[in-house]
Image (cartoon, rainbow, N blue to C red; front, top):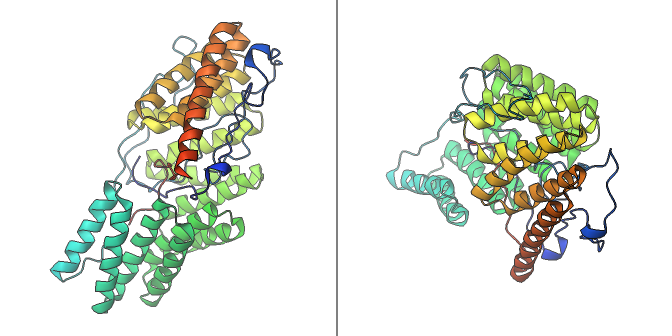
Length: 407
């Protein structure tokens, strides 16, 4: 998945890290745990504070994926359903998305262009502190040259970089400056772009009222210039705010609208994202067969684009659905694949999540010894993570899978 609206957690002290897997971390031994009732959930996944939106998800769920930057139409991969022969998600899914088409404001002076280029390169390789310094240098050069368009563009990029670092409040300040400059330039595309990012920052700061306002402003401005890409993105933003507020009917309506636009545009990544969110809503409402179909559609696309993170988390979610449908063998199958992918991408939170869900499925399937092995491994990983964060006096946000809207 390309660089899209980034959801970086706020930097915080290790004592704020609130992971609460089930079974034995509360002092109750897994060995002594009574059998789970038929309708029991696997353990709740409580990500570290500031993690993506599913903070009230009743079971280990994928970190909430933010709306991606959209691609140009590239065709639509038909969804695939559950197969009794092959199990969940055995078909590949979606095409590489293109860059978001934000106007470039390349400076005419070679030195400034070089600074901008160096900042972009540093950002692209994850050297965010270096990128921040270079964008600040480029911003000063644009100010000296009285280049209003270059300043607006660089303010947005600087905010995006600060967001990656975790400085959300400072990022918000730079975005507000960028918005003022784009408005002075009557640059409608730039205004839409910054409003999107302001909505994302407000959402990450937990200000649902401001996030809803900015997403609605984005939608209005995007429709005014017939920008379906940003319209779909804003609708999804409104959906995730409604979801976090527990208004599932409103969230479903917004995601359905966004999905319709994505299908019209042949935007596979938009389709995958909306399908995943709609699946989460269906799961919360207890419609597990529909959740399974929607997760399958999302998985199909994630496989096709080699989105390993998205594939792993969607497989994990399919494991949840299988558990709820009492298909413990099917659940183990997809969760083992999820675990393998989490290990490949070195996502230890994901690995611990899949292992604990595997333990629950194994326990229900009657294999208590294997369940014990998996839950022990999950707990070991979580202790290692907690110890590392404690020794560091905090941690750096890890959400590389969710990014700010690209220029």
